[in-house]
Image (tube, rainbow, N blue to C red):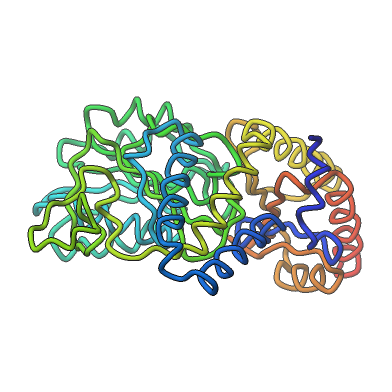
Length: 373
């Protein structure tokens, strides 16, 4: 199918130009039908549908594993990005004097849990971004020493869209420390390989086009990570209800109770759609739409906070104006939806957006900026 053929899955296009997938995505029609199907099953069958729900979760783990080239046994389904990051923060064996390296561009989900560890004598080293909006690998390297247990970084930064080279970062951290990747702004938009990280955490309500309340957590089978909390679902055989706690050997040990199976049903379908479209095709589309924006704003000498090189960006672009809040508000009145981030305007289209959507955005933006000046 052509990418524009998928636009029928997104009724939102009839109401607005939606360019804010880095915040919350609309869900496709197929995902909505899947969610309704779950609730119909629960309404009519209740407990009798349990095995069907469990199998749906198993299928999701397999689809996620396919998406990131991992093993299903390395995938757990949690509630959000923050939960996965906290599983790591609480599950590693920290001692006083250990250090963590992160950056000054991180979303609070990948920042606050590390600051909390200061109470236990853990040092948090914050690498500052360069003037061009990038995080330099040399700066990260200089922050790592024999005390460093973990580097925690976003694959794509939520504010300016900078994309780190995970392969190069993995080569840098290998044999030195563990690597946690916040992939909420990349998974579903660009390829990501599990082999370049020890942990990956990503909520599914953005680029994965899924409901709230479910996230993907990858933990490498080669890494030792303790459970900071457990529940009936954490064991090898949850249905045994045994008085002996035999934790699951797979990442499922981090799933402590009932999943939101309505979200499981929705995520299963959204993953099928994304794999059907092809992540490489999605990446190519986002690059093309980004190029159009860059070419147009260059004509007016508008400051951009996102690196130009395709290898250093994904689906997020950030433009800097003096009146960002007013511009975003006026764009919304014209039914063009973007966000204000990092004192700029953040634009984040997805694969179903096309050149006409971007041209409409640029047309309205140009008119608003001219009126404000």
